[in-house]
Length: 99
Image (cartoon, rainbow, N blue to C red):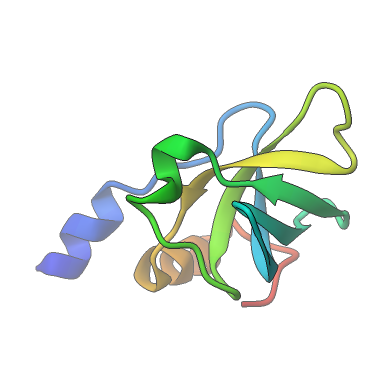
């Protein structure tokens, strides 16, 4: 029952957002993410997420590339739980990533 509740609230990507896997923690709210489009971006964790959500290496995240340096930088928008990540992969939303 709890798994169904968790899956029913999955946030899907909006326009301009990309799935990615956290590769490296860099400190100072910065992480390196391998994105679904094949690029590796330096991402920052915004203050609103910093203390509420703990991001770790190997997590599936949703990132939004910056308008200024879209191929190099991005902001983390959402972190998925392992159950949500497996559901997204099974249903074909995440295609080019291995986690």
